[in-house]
Image 1 (cartoon, rainbow, N blue to C red):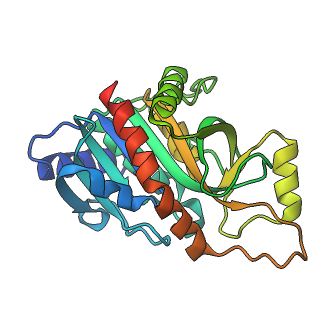
Image 2: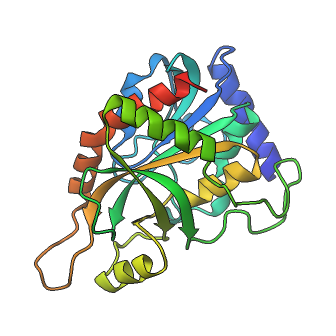
Length: 273
């Protein structure tokens, strides 16, 4: 099936399952953050595997559902988990959900994920507003450009919407929820970073690192969506030989612990759109 046919078929199916609802905001919930979907009201749940052209999500902490409902007084469509390049999916699959949501008429995309940090000022449990990124995963727009989706060479000067960032900072201050602002580095994974890689990412201007987000953000900006990104720090850089071992279950646990704070911030921002 051609890409545009696949997008249209999935969008039509989802729209039919939503019974006339028209989502305004798309939300991607990353590792351990899927429980944030529990705060969405009037839920309609659609498993990815029910949608034409959608495979199952296989990553830990990713339930693999679309959740339609109300958050912050607006209709949203949340992804309870995402697809990753490291799972063996091509970029067309990784960004398919974003393109389908864009075809359904969303104007905003909020993305979240769990990250490691190489910034010594950050701690486990911190929320980090993504102000920019360094993409080290193959670009999701490589290949023939589909003019129906967006331009061949989309501008990425403000990949993460500056107005949304400022609103989020103000909301966090009013709610008394501390947040950091930083540059996110994306890698293909699935192995975690070596101490030398952490140092390299810090040297090139990164604050956090993860295995997702940038393919979806690039596709979203290609489609003209306004994007906000927020991460939760679940792991910090260590030196070889200090006895530390990165534990994926602990990462999910730390993300779960931060989900309620992110939900409050996302809800308040959606109210102000």
